[in-house]
Length: 375
Length: 204
Image (cartoon, rainbow over all chains, first blue to last red):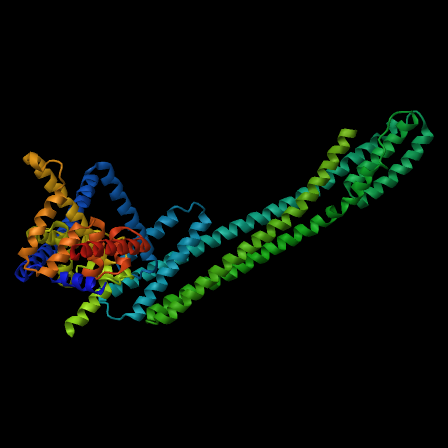
């Protein structure tokens, strides 16, 4: 076995010629290098052709009018959106400030409620004035022209603040006076309603002897009861009195064997129960009028305060106290903002307060209707 | 000493390449590593091919094609199935030899030599190869073994050359021939037995 392996081992001497090996190595090396270079070239060519393909594809797509239109539209929309977004904090003097002004104008133009419009214009004018004071205070490097322009703008903005405040005040006054008038009117109507409801009672009192023609005794009894009922009606309210009156008149009919309305039913009880809000309405109305007057006074005071703040800011700005002017404007803005909040809270409370009596009124009116139908 | 160390390092890459990273070392356009593989395995691959074709010129041609093919396929393929890179090289060599036989057979049939009809291309080369022993100036003892090897079955001859001449492991041979390790061991045993029988027969 060892001999055999030794003999086989000798076969290792079979080798290619060294010169051939050398040549072959050189050939292989050159082929490897060339293949690498060609591979790199292939890669570059492939990338280039891919790039050309993409560019051509884009070109052919962009050339189409529809695609071009969409691309331009997208560009404008995105660009516009980005500019508007970026102009949020733009200060006067910068290019984006005009974009901000345009955005604010659009916002005001698209607001249809006059009150909201005034609020917005007040807010924007205040912010502009504040920004101008900031710019003048922070950067003193502007030339005289821009400073003059900024000062002019500040004055304009303060003027528009004043105008907005004035308009808001006039609106408030109008609203309050309207409210006051309405409440007064309502109060009068309610009083006149009492009187109107008393009328049928007296009419029926007059009509009483007609009902008592056939039996005088019963009529006398009925008379005495009716008198009592009128007295109680005068004390308690119109509706009950009228119901009692019906009872007295119908008592004559009852004796005649006619079908009569019975006031002792629960309807009558309901009516008795419903007279308490009637009593309080007049006092409520007077209270409301008083509160409206107070509000008007308060608002008058507030508007005076706001106007004085504007004037103070103007004076400080004139004197070159930009920081003080800015503080005054900030104070003014916060006062306006808190006033808005207060108003909103008031309106909410008012809504809930007015809704409650309305329900009682409706309930009483339905009861009246029921009564009439039964008659 | 340095050459020995570098051969060992290369063997680690090519023969013990359990880690696929070794394959990627060559794949990463590392020409130097591939040329090292060439230097290390050119003789073995040449010998393996020479025992198959038995003609030095043809063996040289096929060997140069094998290394070029190996380089191209390493560059293009994402991964190789073979566990050992050396097995990958031998497989390419085997396929190149098969391609060579196929082409030669076609050429012979085109020539229409009636005398050659019915004889395989392999036997033609075998006959010619027997004379080539003289061309490589091998001594009589070596020539004897060579002749006896040529008489063996192709699969026995291949396994004996891979194991005792090129010194590959059983696993590597299994990977090259597509057999199991046990199957290779059995075949090797039988091949040696057959070779010994042939040698003893001649001595008698």
